[in-house]
Image 1 (spheres, one colour):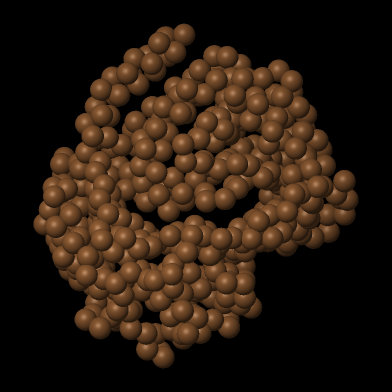
Image 2 (tube, one colour):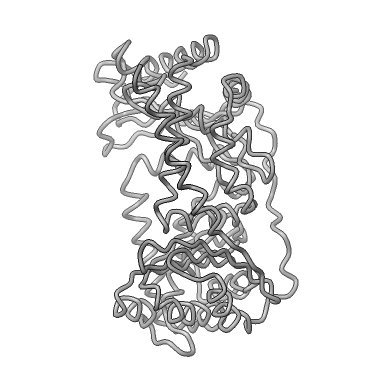
Length: 448
């Protein structure tokens, strides 16, 4: 009882500090279309520079899957001014760190370094935006690296293989059904020309977003951006994203994957679900709360209580939802049965728990606690400069705006029980679901 009173007080206290960070967000666009966001945080003499490209694996041409991730690796090779490996070596020599990442909707590069070294990393990042140099040895070696990465992260992991197959079944036509890392047979055929074609098409100032966060002066960031990114020529004829649309799903799709490496069999189900939309984030906020209600905490969540503690049929149960995507996302539920409980029994128990939730709705006290906890989590996130920079970059490359990012915490705390239940009823349609079983060879249990 006391905790219910403490949480709102804590959130209110934290909220007093939040506007100081929010007010330190500024934005500008250069003449060549290069967009920049600056987030001030003067608590430590550190800066994070991130350059995000509005190009991810879902923008690849059919038959060249993995090329977005392939080029991400190749971007650490040389330019006309930097020798291969010199970029990262220079960052490290100056006490910083750097890395990159590729997703369906974006590719990003970042450096974390002392604030007085911002000009150094900005100059190098601008250099490789337009002047990448790839030798014959560079691209062939790096192709082997990404294939080995697939070996380690996907082919050696039965769970990753099941997720890959389920995504392909969930998205029959949309490119979200193709793995970010790529299909192996297409990765093996990637060439230097494929990488350069991708680079020349998408790596341009008018397709990029700079996010600088930390101990910086916005006017100085803009001056440096104009000096280093401003002279870069934009790509002409760069059109808005046009991806194949997913046809209506009319029936549930079911998969069963047996693998000798499976340690613990489980059932997972994914549903197509709407993503956050610019200016209309309410449904996504409700789905975010729903995921937390159903599976956010093993001890107190709906699925955790029903399947792990009450019935004792499961070792674990959870729910997840990815709100930030350019196109329709997925909402997933998961259950791993205890020894002696079949996958069919576990799935039936999962269905019963979901049906009970749709019938009875959430416990009002639990709903209030979860909504408050998520609000507090959003405020705590303001403390992480790199995480905050990532939040803005991910949102802006997924079709959202700065206003949407800043309105998201309020959208979450404004969600009502009725809105959560409406979102649940809309999403939990078995005709729009993919159900997967992960099991071991020799299990002759028939999937219903």
